[in-house]
Length: 188
Image (cartoon, rainbow, N blue to C red; front, side, top):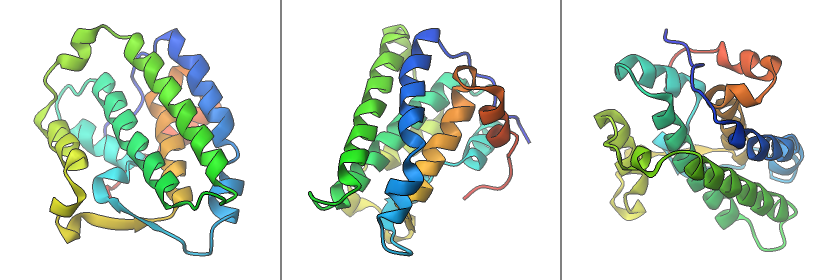
């Protein structure tokens, strides 16, 4: 299979991504222990963004630019964090953590956008990526029932973390990135 590593990450991205990573280190406590056993939320199957999905895209889209995958990573995970916040009651012990995680994520996204020329975000996306983008922005009521999956908040945030290590590997130690990024197998 095609390797997942490769993107050049601007140095300005590393600080907000490391800050986000620091927050992610508490995900077990806030995303697992504060939820009932087997608790899951409904997400579009394309929002289950795993390393295997990245490998599959690399194989199917010839010459896929990792910058496109990074853009997609931000799109997918921004939606995931918003969905998790939406299902948490105001006084849930994980709500402040998740809101802070989402704020740090938005900060990283802001630096990402600022660290690339505007033309990069106006370029046409490869058809496969555009199809995913369109599916993720479709109104929930228009999405076929077969497109929905249930996943635990921890599983979704774990995927955010693991894919971050690979798509922005230059910001993380070789141990963090290589542990996750050597994994490339089947899709969802």
